[in-house]
Structures are given as structure tokens and as C-alpha cells.
Length: 91
Image (cartoon, rainbow, N blue to C red; front, side, top):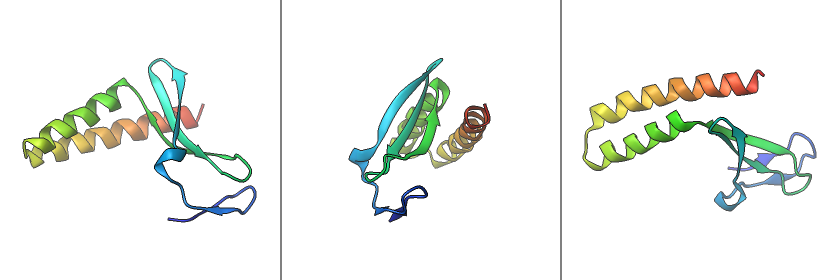
């Protein structure tokens, strides 16, 4: 998936090794990547202790094949990530 930087119009394809993580405090981290041309920061997601726990639970229930439980936890994860991302981005 190609990205066109909103700042410099440089085109690039983000790679996993471009992802960086920084600690925001209160057990909250942000994952992001920077434009390789102008260094503009692009936020990928915000995670908290709760979201990390839910992600681990999804892996466990996926491994044992409990799709119903996985779907419920995914809904909970979406709600928590939406709440967290809105809270962090709106402050």
C-alpha cells in the first residue's frame, strides 16, 4: 500500500521495520512511522495495558479455536481502542 505524504508529497510504502513506538505515560504507548523524506509522523495506533491484555486474549482463544470468544473480545478491543484513540487525539 503506497502512502503519499501530506507534507512533502513523497511516495513510499511503509514497512514493518519503519514502525516506532514511544511511551506516553500511564502505561500508554503510541505506534507510528515517519515519512522517509521529510520525517512527518503518521500515527498507527495507541495502546494501553487493557488493549495489550485483550490482544493477548485474542491470540489465546484463536489458538484453541473459540471463534465466538474471539469475536466478543475483538468488539471489546475496538471499543477500547476507539475510546483511547479519541481520548489521546482530542487532548
